[in-house]
Length: 162
Image 1 (cartoon, helix red, strand yellow):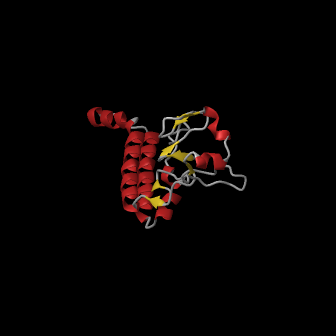
Image 2 (cartoon, rainbow, N blue to C red):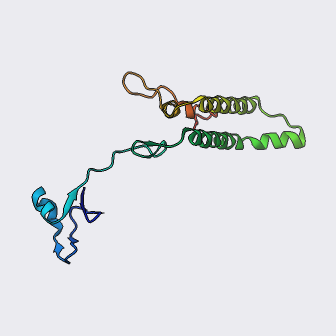
Image 3 (cartoon, one colour):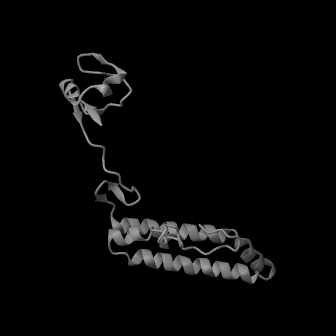
């Protein structure tokens, strides 16, 4: 990216220099020497980074903070998955009507998955270990073979998982 006085310039758009001279939108066609003569400086684009794990390129977020946030998210996801069947629990409490076994099994599977995910999160001691929780396993052709460990939630019986 070409910079003038600390400001990035977009190719295809004109710009004004400190003397008030308006430069045309086709300034990108100028040679590097012409650009430098007019006070432009080349700056490489910043390296890409995953902002889930890094503050900026090469600057990782604190792993303990990441873990705490991930555990909180896990708990919220589990609560959301259980929410659709909570009415069975309330109905059973109020009327004694039975809760279908598949509902009980699913709820238990969600709680078990939550425990496994939280344990996996807490076991991470490094940034790389934490990031590995988000990697979806693939076969030799690159096709997903399951869920990333952080998303290993049970199927709700309707083919849905998160």
